[in-house]
Length: 111
Image (cartoon, rainbow, N blue to C red; front, side, top):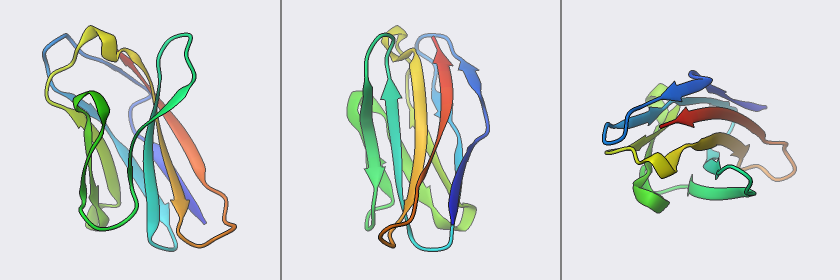
């Protein structure tokens, strides 16, 4: 079984300051971890994903996330927020074992 917990339901930042959206996971097996973004009036879009290998994952629009197994975390960061980053951000986990259900959770970022 697996789950994700996003510790901040809503994050407000000013333009130009760093962004941190926290995500912790629980998984019985090595996880696949994902961040999705949904901009206003648009569909869900994959921002970045971790499957294995390099723990620091770079995504689109300057976002990155680091897989930290010891902390069971996959926090999303960006060095400098832009007004166009205002959106809902979803952290998701899926076990690497086939046929197990994943879980999705959400943060709202306001710029």
